[in-house]
Each structure stands twice: as C-alpha cells, then as structure tokens.
Amino acid sequence: MAAPREAEDAGGRSRAVVLPGPRAMWRSCLRLRGGGRHLLNCPRGGLTASRGPVPKPPAHARAYAPPAAERKRFYQNVSITQGEAGFEINLDHRKLRTPQAKLFTVPSEALAVAVATEWDSQQDTIKTYTMHLTTLCNTSLDNPTQRDKDQLIWAAAKFLDTDTVACSPLVLWVTDGPTLVSSGQTSSSASSLRLGSLAGGVEEPETLVELQRNEWDPVIGWAERRYGVKIGSSTSIMGPSIPARTREVLVSHLASYNTWALQGIEFVVSQLKSMVLTLGLIDLHLTVEQAVLLSRLEEAFQIQKWGNVEWAHDYELQDLRARTAAGALFVHLCSESSAVKHKLPQ
Image (cartoon, rainbow, N blue to C red):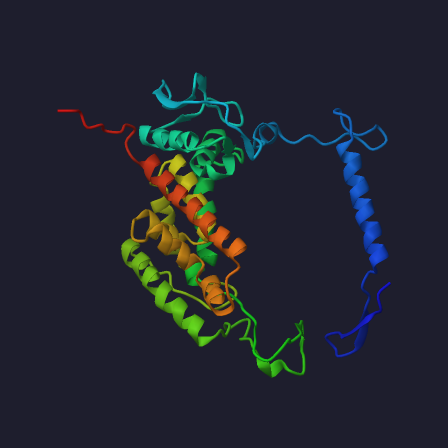
C-alpha cells in the first residue's frame, strides 16, 4: 500500500490521506472485469434465478437503440418520392426507415433532398455519426424521449440561466506555481491565486475579460433590441438574473416554431450552450463560424496562450461546426414551404 500523504483539514489539523496501492487497484479492476464478463455471458432470458432477472428497458428505448456507427454501404442509388404523409427517401428500391422501423417521412422536399444528399455522399462505409440531418429527422419521427412541444421549448429556454455569452466562468488562475485550494483554506502561496468572491463574482485576466465583453456584449445588445428584452451579463457563479418578461417573450417566440424546427433549435442550443447565439444564428445575424467561435471564446483564448492539440482541439472544433450547421439548416428547412421550386427549361 502506498505511504499516507499528509494534508490539512479545514481547521488546520493534519490528517492522512491514504491512497490505494497497486494491488488493491488491480483487485478492483479484476472485480469489475469479472462482473462485466458475467453480465455479457448471461442467457437471453436474464440472470439466474438466484440473482434475479435483468430489468428490461422501455420498449421505445430498446427500439431506438442506434445502429452500428459504421456499416458497409448496401445501396447504389438514392432518390426521393412524395407519399401521403410527406417526402420519403429510397435506397435503391428500399424505403428508408427510422430506428423504430417507422417510415422515414419528412415534411418538406428541401429537407428530403438534404437528407438524400447525406446518404448519397457516403462512400464504401456508412458513417451514421456524420449524418446529423438524418439523426435529427429520426429524433423528430421517433421522439424517443417522448417530449411534446412545450417540453422542447423549456429544454431550450432553460439555457438562458447559464447562457455562455451572459456568464463569465469561474476560473482559477495560478501565476507562480501550483497552489492547493480546498474548502475553507488556502496554501501559503495563496497570494498568487486570483479568485473573486463566490457571491460577488470572479476575477480573470484582464485580456480575457476584455475579449469576452468586446465580443459578447454586441451580440447581447442585438438580442435585446431584436426582441425588446433585457438580458445583461454576470460574473457571478449563480449566473445572470433573467427578468420574467424576457423569459416570457423568448418562450413565446419559440412557440411560433413547429415541433420539427424546435427539435433543431434545442439541438443547436445544446451544442452552443447559448440561447442568444442560437437566436443570432437562426436569424442570420451570425454565421456558423462566428457562433461557434463565440461559444468557445475562453477555449480559443487558452489555445492561443498555451498552444493547440491538433488531434483533439481541431477535431472538436470541426465536429461542433458540423453539428451547429446541420442544426441551423434543419430549422430553416423545417420552417419553409413543403415544396422546392424548380426552374423550368425555356
């Protein structure tokens, strides 16, 4: 077993923190591994009678289990047809279906063309994790979480309380070496740590604060003028105090969208962690690149200061851009008329 490590509690008294030794950690791993193997080797009917049956997930959860992330392409041609309930996607002579085996039907021809393009652009391998429009359509058709329109609206509106552009995150900045900070105490080098009052706000490097205010405040100002509300910003860990009228106005605005479009709005809000940026993107006040950059402003600041990890930061950035762009496009395609106008040859 590893030697105890000395530490101090909140009253300044010494106490020993015992770390598990390698043997204990290895035994824990073996127990976890053995338990996992036992579950994997269970018969289909569940565990043995002495252990009790395996609880079954709800029917909609089982049916909505996503397919394999990658599979071999099994079709040659992709086409769309108009059916009684909307527009359908055909893979050769097979009609596309959702994970719950429902007929894949979308409300507009433009959305059907976009989804068909996703399927047609797949090469030898179908990579479903790159097909964000298809995923959003599946979610709208199957509704695996059983959410109605009001629940979708409030799922998006709740991000107002922690909106990215209205909150300055709590950051610990150490200027001259490691500093241990725990509840009720600081180390001898606590003077090197800049931490504001938990109730009043936080202190951050002036360059980051200035960057955030210069970039975020204009977007907040646009949203306030556009919707006639007050949003403001806060450095408190409790987040901004959103007036009741602001919430009512924005909820009423979201209610003007149909359920399909709300699925896209909630998806974009969850990606950007910001209702304000999502509204700016949907209203074409911001581009996808601008909205994503503003949602990652602090991370971009850190990367500029400490360097970029290409295989991690670059992938995360491109993936966020793709998801955000797909969500915004989905909202617009679900809010337009059902048919695409084709220019007739002269």
